[in-house]
Image 1 (cartoon, rainbow, N blue to C red):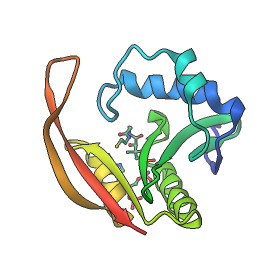
Image 2: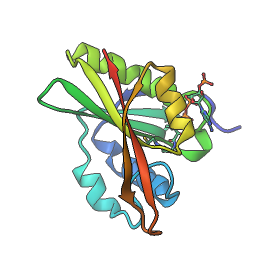
Image 3: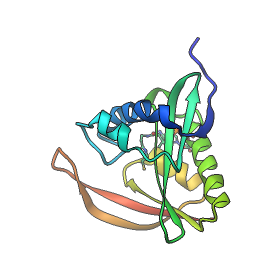
Image 4: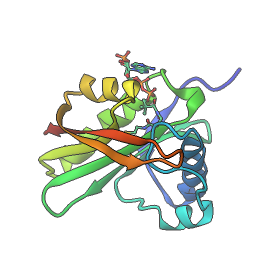
Length: 158
Ligand SMILES: CC(C)(COP(=O)(O)OP(=O)(O)OC[C@H]1O[C@@H](n2cnc3c(N)ncnc32)[C@H](O)[C@@H]1OP(=O)(O)O)[C@@H](O)C(=O)NCCC(=O)NCCS
């Protein structure tokens, strides 16, 4: 039986490599996140900012992560991903709920993010937690395919 339950905890040093491996796998999908292959896994692992990183773990496996990049202006910018086989099981919701709590505890007044305009799953997740659309960056991201993708800017006042 595969592990079905998961928990959320802060990222720690020995998460670096699995976080980078998971990031590379999501980049391979060329769909939800801005990065595309190739991802330099060792460099990504070494440069991962653990402060503001929350991980979802099932057994000893990292099944999702979220990073809040704290600005000096009171807001935090979110990036997140869940392992493909774990999507639709509440991992993203649990990570986002923990991120909102993390941000409130540290006195941030707002969380913000960019999401590709076609990313229905992510947009539904963010709306569920009260994020609202604040703008659209038209043909903002040039993909390796040559396509130009729109991104929505979303924000949540805390
Ligand atoms: C976006 C992502 C993080 C969501 O994580 P998840 O663990 O699947 O999310 P959850 O299971 O908690 O679902 C949250 C909500 O999203 C919605 N949702 C989930 N999958 C969906 C889908 N395929 N289509 C539409 N809505 C969907 C549901 O409304 C769900 O709410 P509910 O629990 O009340 O039904 C995940 O799909 C992912 O990692 N995608 C690839 C990377 C990515 O796109 N990152 C975000 C970049 S901005």
